[in-house]
Length: 150
Image 1 (cartoon, helix red, strand yellow):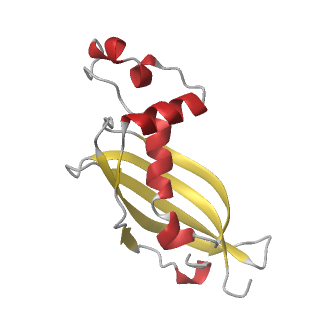
Image 2 (cartoon, rainbow, N blue to C red):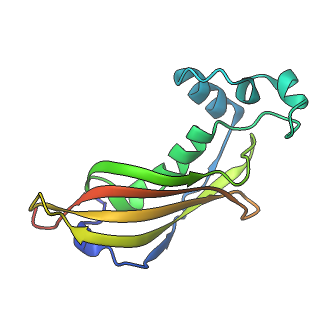
């Protein structure tokens, strides 16, 4: 698999992911409906005209999933054994239909698993930016990663 193993990660390492994704109205509507999120800020253009944003905003859970997902092919494809948690999730700016999102991942820390011999724990910081390089999402994620000997 293409993903990096536990040993490949270095604390402080930064990855600026080349894959970008323009978010469409369809993405937002489908994700909101699939997750049963009927918030009119995501689905109702007339309602949203009178909101503080003046238009619909993209479902923040979609934004989070996109920012975390962008790194998979480059960093963790086939080498993640599972997500252990996410903390410090924030959305400093809204995402709108037509925004193009790019992401950066920083390796915060890592340690050998105390319970498993085939893996280690890596702490990632994922940051998402719009086409104006404005921060739109941030998340710290802890994942159980395969070792090369696994």
